[in-house]
Length: 346
Image (tube, rainbow, N blue to C red):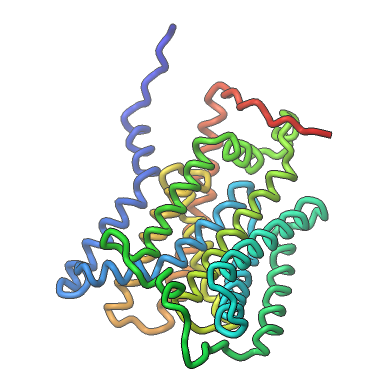
């Protein structure tokens, strides 16, 4: 058996830079801000606060990543986040529902909204940008109808302590919200990298026609991807309600751009050229360190949207380049056998 040719050193170095360059950037940013702010930035209190503050954007970025695997985009996630957290506050604070039941209903409702997005995209054949922007506007209208444009404030007894502990408590010395991010990353990594479900989704994203030819039901799996995204958005909405303890009908829009920045930038790391959970986590870490550093340096309020917008443009450009590079590499490799497609019952 002829051994495969070894990769030249220059190509190996380029691969390492492409896969782990973003992780190295995170370390360099942390070092730079630690040198600039030695008394505040590298402290455990600051690290804990950054982890806590960025946990919801990280969860939302992981949710946005799932449809991107299939080359689709869900622009309704910001609106869905707003509706989920308002519904949680409405049920727990005003309707006096048991908080576990309210949270379960909101999470399942998020999955249902995501599945509806997938049905609109796949069966109505509407571009995912347009379809999810339209459903997002409907979600925003429902949010306004529930709140009448006003904030939902808990009564004099406040919210149940067990509910707010969903966000405020600690686990193994870390904010429990950061543990949620790590757990969700692990679950998505397992689903996308180690199970046939993920391979089918990646094939659909790279070549939907080829996926159909080998017997993969593309419509069904795209609906699954959107439903998974909606379920993650529902979880983020519950945590946002536990964090803010007040229902703000417009808060979800502030999370839309950072979520897509993290998801798109993450496709340039770990597995360059395709969206992946570990890369998204690394991208979120880079964004968290950057935003925390420039905030502590006393930057003006407009620097944050400038940073997010510039990073989004950079992420889209880098993601496109990484995808083209991956395609060029695949053309030089022999085709790899796909797992047997699932049986489709009539």
